[in-house]
Image (tube, rainbow, N blue to C red; front, side):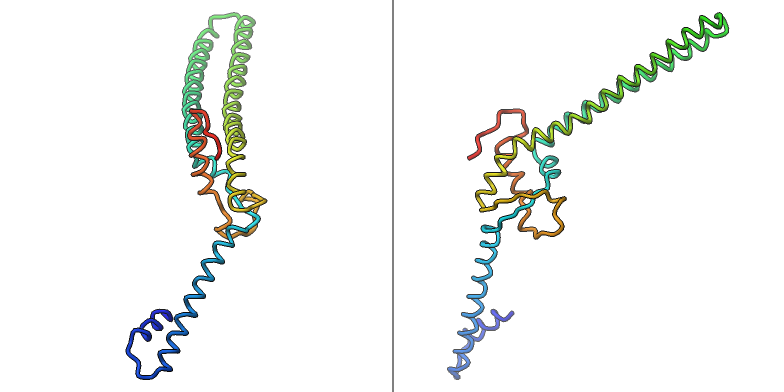
Length: 203
């Protein structure tokens, strides 16, 4: 508003030289102030020694992370179907065993029942181990991703003159200018891609 007013005064014919001089000085002052703000913003980012990044978003929103999660979701769906199939098979076996109870000697039935209980327990342990292995895979994929992304993040730090990179979740307070998550994702995608091909070299 002040700048517009000053420009209006400059463009308007003046009979009073003092009014023209006041408008001219006001315009120059505002222009210098704006230039100072722009320089301050650039310097604020360039010489800032500490940056922050959200590693969870870094993985989940990167091409590498998206592909890894999709593959694990497919494996999870397959495991769920396998669990359901085994459950149905055990229920059917239990029905057959129950039907034999009236026609078998108690001791023989007890042996079959114990064998069935052991089979159920073994099946549960095997399927639980597969579920835990699937959960471990996602952490393994994240660690693999972060190790591969480290040189890219370091190059970005050197580019802007930063010496420290902090995890966003461990920072109490920071400005948005310190968060390089979005920039880092773009850089990482350009080097690692979705992980299906060899990574490009970091320039």
